[in-house]
Length: 416
Image 1: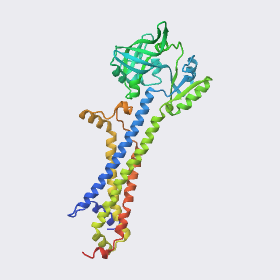
Image 2 (image 1 turned 90 degrees about the vertical axis):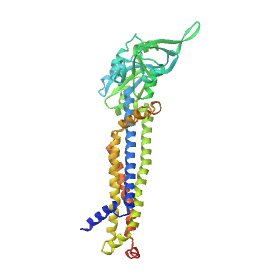
Image 3 (image 1 turned 120 degrees about the vertical axis):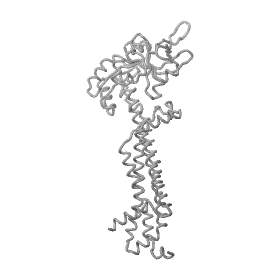
Image 4 (image 1 turned 180 degrees about the horizontal axis):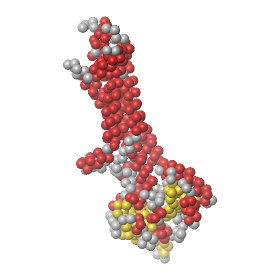
């Protein structure tokens, strides 16, 4: 048996001690389990954070245009030439005018503030995905002059209405009469209900026809602005600036990165903090190998002394215990990676099963913006976590192995 072979053989054998005292093998198993759990938890947590970022971006972009051009005074008159200019840009995939304003929605004894957004259903499909998020009804029912309204699911629940019910829309701007200032009101018929899964939209946003919105807010033929959809969402800031400069007008431009930058920045900060904190958990689990190997060295002092007396070099003793610690770290890391990947891929099913079985909701949509627990596994995160865990496990073997190599054979065998 070659030198390297006997070192690997002894190191492997020490992992699963067959002596009457199985305590050594037990603590080896506990060290493996600790690393596996730490690695699995880190993979799952980072996958959930990645899923939150993906879902937040997808759902925001489903309701929020990639970019917008608005009038400097909140009103964009003669908007058709601007829309034609934007449409002619090859980087723009859709343009839709909109009118927006605040209103109070009333039904029976229920009332709620909301943002009213007047849209052209045909053009809206090119800049948002709200048409695909309808639970009941259709955006195409928003016909000018019919005074119909589409509500978010949470807003409809708050008002206690459904399709066919009528709600009263009251504006802050009033009409001056001999009796005083009277708020402007108009009754709308609920024609549809949508659900994004984000409380911010489902509770606060309602759609009406752009023609009805112009009449309601007394805009004549003007609009609040234009919403743009671009072929490359990350190029939206540059595209909208270029179009605004071409118009030669004084306009306000915005894009999705500006409106919701705090969301994405907070997610990135949270991901970094969680990675560091949970990496410390992995480090603690990996450093358990130190105590495991120290106990093995104490238990195997006579074996080490015998190996030294038959010619084993200190470097060979070091490799024995490095092999043992590496096996513990490798097996624990692989088990954690497999468990973390499987749980991350099936996390939504697992959470759905637990919620259905125990009758609770893990995420409150009014707190966490979304009501489902998403997960997105990224191979880069898995490789980085596995690599760091293996490096920490290997580093944990150095001190016990060095301590074993320093054992003096005569001292170890004095009482044997």
